Image (cartoon, rainbow, N blue to C red; front, side, top):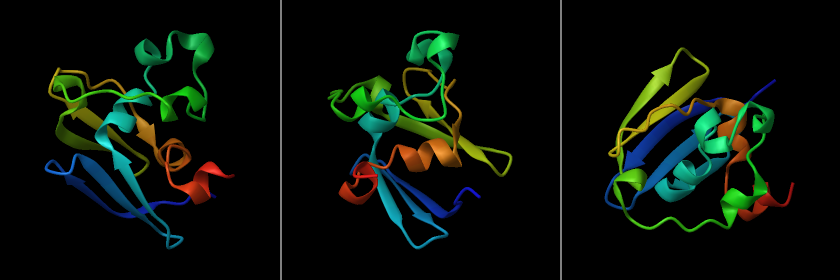
Length: 112
């Protein structure tokens, strides 16, 4: 069973999304990581590169401040995902709960 968020808070000043999970864990995602880890087919480089887990390279990517990393809105997708809407208009990435949790950058999650 996939863990689910109990709350999501987007802080545009610190440029972070904070997600509290139902298992007690809290994840803090820099907006730049969310954009680097976008799961859409365009960002992943084709249908053959789609998968349930983020590519390990996204954790080493350093995207600077730009419209591509400025969150404009966060849209719910049913009860299973969110879609970030970026200032550059990109809004194709559906981050389901499993993928979002796998994208957690904390040491505990990265060690798994």
